[in-house]
Length: 333
Length: 245
Image (cartoon, rainbow over all chains, first blue to last red; front, top):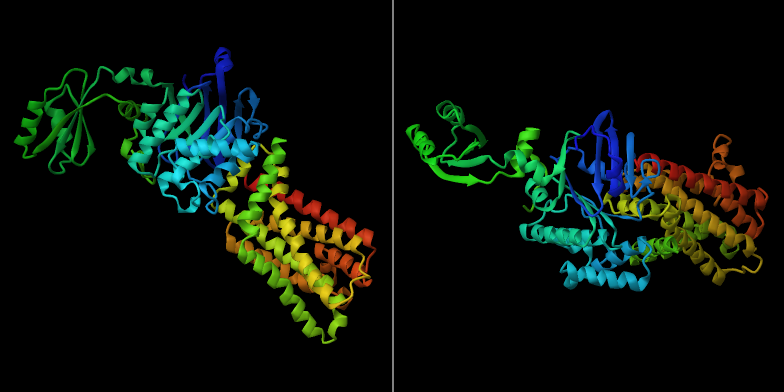
């Protein structure tokens, strides 16, 4: 589906979220620009884009925290553009920042969040205990949320998002700013939730995370959807591509240009000052490249064959380097 | 039923997390006692002055307790984004804000009972028209809390909430006829008294406690109710405009 495509009525039947022409501007600056997409029942849908692309604004519009300037939102057939609270009983939200109550314990936070969705006392307690166990937080259950580590906060925030077992879950950058082990555990939990039938709308600026978890992905850049497709379809154009990463001992800004002149059948680009990316449609012979570098006084310290990944696709389509995706936010890759 | 569970728990959470904390309880006890003592000493007319001072002390205890607590707690939750959880819950905004203000209203009412309890040991309160006092306490607590809500929606920082609260509260002490009759105010300031909700609440209390009211009680109740409704709906409109952008 391309951004300007209209929804096919047959798709809409199985779609839990249908968004059409959604637009939002803040102080004259367009944050989200006429985006259209759908999320199907039971799907894990990824919203991938750099910081400031409009991911959180989109989630806020979908969940009723921000009013769209134009466009339509339907969740489970309910018109949420006119009535933002129409589908709030169906959705769970994990915001980009852990926003539980610092003065309450982990257990009390979960019970309180469950109460917001009308769960009765015993149901709240049982569900809170269950989730604390699933997320490995039993030992911290009676400690105040304010004293939790970042990873623990993130886990409890996700637990709070699913406390009422919502059929649709919004996850806004769930692994940003946490350690590697916690990020891995959270990804496992997301995959488990997906397997259990929850429809998940995931925003992330980690390409690898989106590739690993999502079934379909939308690339969002400067408020516009550049591409929406399944991961398999997105990878199709680069499937036959061969990639080689050359790590060199010292910065050589002119090297890619010199290499391109000498090896015209290959494509060269600088990933960083000390890493060059080589692409070709056929197998790449490493030895001539290493020899060429050494003849120019540059030592190659590593030559690694890369797998074509979503990163290539993203760079090719958006022109944005993966490194620039994480500016301002750091965390558990 | 689901909404009732949600609303009850929002109020309960606020009471536990904010209002029943030892500093607030001690402040709630200390503040009315300090005001009573101050005006008691200032009046110089001994125990006789208690019944005339009591309405002012009761009103001011409610005002200071309810306004600042709500303004600060809502601003705090807005700042750390936990308020978003409430906005995302499947509860109508009006109901949500009623639950959110419920704790502060109760806190204000309890604050009002402290000076009354203390006064009962010092003077004869048998002539007090309690049927007017209790509804007045409720309405003053509601008006003060909704004033706090109005302040919370107008500011973004906790210190702004406190400053803005004082901007309203301190002039009210002198302009609303709590301790000085409105007739004794300079002519230019007198109209101001009539645009402040506490004027009508204090007048009910004066009338019910020692018969010194300026306006009919029914009119006071009516105007105070209008103030409550107005403050609430302006706040709700501002939340829609400012928080759900």
